[in-house]
Image (cartoon, rainbow over all chains, first blue to last red):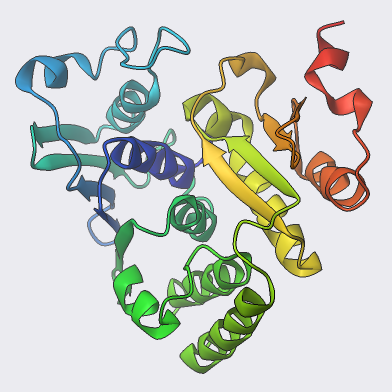
Length: 177
Length: 122
């Protein structure tokens, strides 16, 4: 993946497929600590221990359209190549939590990329899924909670094209404060 | 600055349009493959271009996402379903092709032969 934002999209798609109703995404981007910390937490169906042990294996997948699953193994390899760390915890019926932490100034750390595009892509998928997105850097913190946006929308689906376009600029601006 | 006031305006316009047009009254359904293979090949900007163009032209089109379609080497893949559920599969789509698909297929009903999977597998 060329961007961290694309990796986040890929990892969060797993949460969608696990029928999550609430997906929390945290990005902590710190010069001070020299890390880019990515967290994805969902309340989806979760995995049992046996499955959990296999998900970092590229030759494991639950899908039937092809026989390999690269999303999680690529994320793990990508953070570890920078000297960072990866962890995955899951509990059947409760949810899954994935953390990857890059060493920010490492040569192999991908650029952050377009987070706004990633988020609107996720939100566009299904208006029944809620997201809490938290962006933390050394100077400020910004939070987007789709539940709050939906309160304003008063029944109009959040994934209508016009609203998705507004959200894209709103996220872009929020992350530049 | 994007304000919440602006969001309220967009909401009210959307409500107006929803009462004008019955839900489900859509000419086309557009599906973009958005698994690891699609994302790595550039499906995200393709999806967002489609959403943007559909919004700008106010087209009666639903844009949706799906997982791996099964031809990873030909991603990004965009499937267009018409009212009768006839499917056209476009492969190796980029943002330029996505704009063409909106203009020529979704707005004027023309199948763009040279972008289809049939053209590539020949």
